[in-house]
Amino acid sequence: MSRFMSSRFAALETYVPGEQPQDMQYVKLNTNESPFPPSPEVIAAVNAYEVGRLNLYPDPDCKRLRKKLADLYAVKEENVFLSNGSDDILNFAFMAFCDRERPVAFPDISYGFYPVYANLHNVPATVIPLREDFRLEVEDYCGLCQNIVIANPNAPTGRTISVADIEKIVQTNPDHVVLIDEAYVDFGAESCYPLIKKYENLLVCMTFSKSRSMAGGRLGFALGSAALIEDLNKIKYSTNPYNINRLTLVAAEAAVDSDDYYKKNTKIIAENRAYTVEELGKLGFTTLPSKANFIFTSCPKLSGGNLYRELKRRGVLVRYWNKPALQNHVRITIGSKEQMDVLLEKVREILKEV
Ligand SMILES: *Cc1c(COP(=O)(O)O)cnc(C)c1O
Image (tube, rainbow, N blue to C red; front, side, top):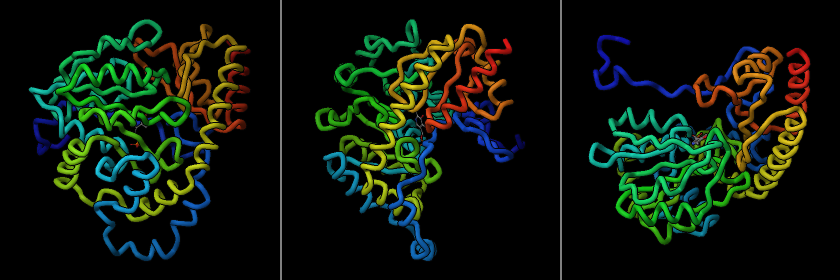
């Protein structure tokens, strides 16, 4: 750290992204990317003509894409906010809605970025423990009188809560924002976004990074009441109005137009998930029920750390956290059938040696 860094940020603990090794080819099951390329329509849309227009700024309103998403989700354009990855939206939401007087609550085991944003923006955080077996107790969030952030499905567990339960949380915290992070909702969970028509305080965040195979394009969107979206726009237009680049915009428009392609892919992922859970079960693994494109699993014969290291040595990357509550587990992204077969083969090999 230089001597010029503001003292506000001196003690800031940053988010630690999963490894993105550039040195060798791994079977990469560590950051929940899609194993499928973007749709052929997306690949065709990012053409020489569009690249040739990079001298021009993109549309800061993202009007065409917002209209397409509004149609897809049967909401109004004023209910759609777009930004450079849903991480960006989370950041804006913490900035817009949270402060010393409006603290935020989230589960102790969830997406690692929530505590980082709370720290970054100096927001007191109420960290609510999950219950046995990583279950979220809905009653813990009812009538809290704080802003609330919940990932549904949760990361890294894959567990979900029902839309009825989310409605209870939203209803009993009418004067605070409830942000539901649905980064993984397309892999088999039910989205709560229809509730935005009924509740002004509900913000639903989604992303093109997982189900829509566009992690490298950086695009997230939020659905919420016009009032909440207006607040997010206030922050966006006070930081970087052009935060979505031209190529990502045309790619995303084509992605929305080829929604069936992604629906088909998420079905394949769900099948591969069931297959992987079953095969790991035969090898003695216990896996939490997952509605996401990853599973959270443990094996009594191997610590999470050992499994992670042994798999990495064999060219398979999974995610592991060296924290007491998570140490026995690894999180494995569900990829193609071929990738899962490599994983299973390596796991069998490792188990023979212990
Ligand atoms: C991946 C992920 C995000 C962020 O996705 P972006 O790539 O920034 O759109 C947000 N929340 C959760 C829970 C995630 O796993």
